[in-house]
Length: 336
Image 1 (cartoon, rainbow, N blue to C red):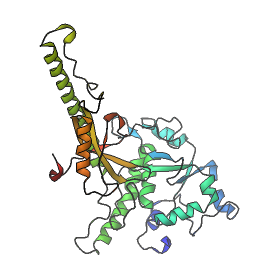
Image 2: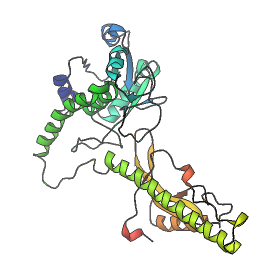
Image 3: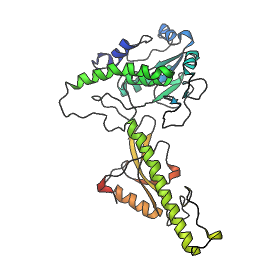
Image 4: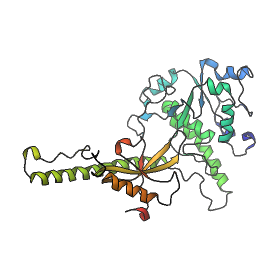
């Protein structure tokens, strides 16, 4: 069905890439069904990988530049390089050239079609290692709705994979692929009635995620500073301002972060679910409070009134926030 789609991205890939094999069909051929095709996939000692989320899939992400930024500190998968460092260093061009060749298999089609094709292939399901992309930006396919955050068109997925695997050439290769794609989207949008929204606007951009992570760090530091100041004031009151063993505790992040009881003030986060991604669902912090747990839970319940399941708020201590959690303040109407 995707073959007949006029605005699919596979024809653009055919025009942009030379070392590309396109196999059309509604089933992925098994080795015994099409041995020539499978020999082409492993030609030159190349190792095939299936680019598809699933059990055991390793994350494929762009390497961290030496002085650059990356929101993740997790170890990149073995497909990235042999060293496992995943950082962009001066010798990356040599590393890319000396690394074993890899064949990346992308299933082009609607997500339901791609899932069905993978599930019906024993070779894809049981033989191939899987990788899942961690994209650097959300899909630019504005007139086709993506089912979850991080979902991309086939061309965008190939561009992100090249960015992750091709070392210093990665950014240039990605830009070369994305340029005609964006031109195609721009031209098509010219035929869409004015006022039609981007179908993927609900997803958070990479810049917004980065800003939200930084804002969360600031909010936690401010709340912990409030806790430390309160502890210092309490200690000064207890000792009457005297010195010695009654000196106020120093201002550090461990002060009053973990309460002894639910009625003792501590730093708590009120959180909600964000958009569902390919591998997980983000956690969004809406408030960071220094208060007794009982009060923070009451606040979360109040915010949840009238909201459906999955859209409600709950409480987490800072130590339980998952990696990548970000801060997004509540609208003014919901603020205390």
